[in-house]
Length: 325
Image (cartoon, rainbow, N blue to C red; front, side):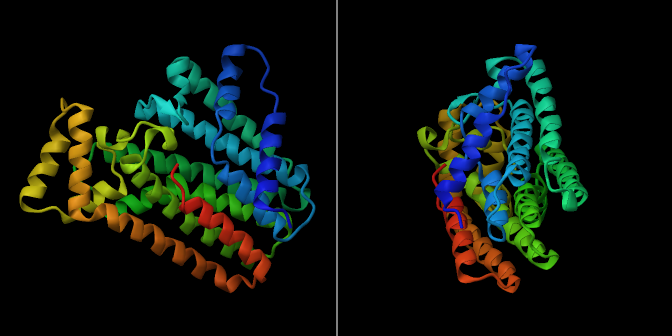
């Protein structure tokens, strides 16, 4: 069974082998740029890992579908950054800032198309199933992004609203990665479904962790300006939970911070950070991550995996959630 480092190297080498040096340059250079500035590569790594749990044969029939997941993820990032007006991605200028919105949109479109081309390398025995899972997931990711944008116009959302949104926007693609990898590796349907549910819970935990890092991380480590979600009034776990908890003076302060469009970053971000801390949502956000981590393990207990397989999954989950970026 491959180590985490070996899987990471396989994925990086695979991404490096993709040829983006085509014409017109303006269309393909942004794609090469986005991939070159790095990332956690958690989706392709998880796909390869879940395949390797059941098969030692790690060739293009799993590598290219795994890369498809990263390329598709890159497409969503380019378009999300345009919608969010984000300036930085992985400590570098976002594609739409380095080029412009029109180029970024088209480059993202090409990445979406390329992801489908790569996914067709899945074995013939499961190709239709893999493409159906991928297509269903792709639609759900778009649904999640639409909910995210809808929430920007809503003065109030519930935690249930938030969890539904991140389930679609973030967790389904991580779940898809595990399921496709397991299917290509030869897992039975019951085991593939259990791994999918395991990864879905991890995906929820991953996004809440991301919310925490966006508000309380360090820019140099996290790779984005801290407080971006705060400045845009983005409906994160922290904000949704604060809306539920705040009362009296805390509620008045929260409403004031959300309504004041002219409040500078140096005023709004630390004020919201203090409010989050005072309401206990910073602390309880960490607890929510840990709870979902435990839920993920309950999903996998019935899969009948051996200790070595479980150890591989544990290492991946721990690295994913105990991170600072």
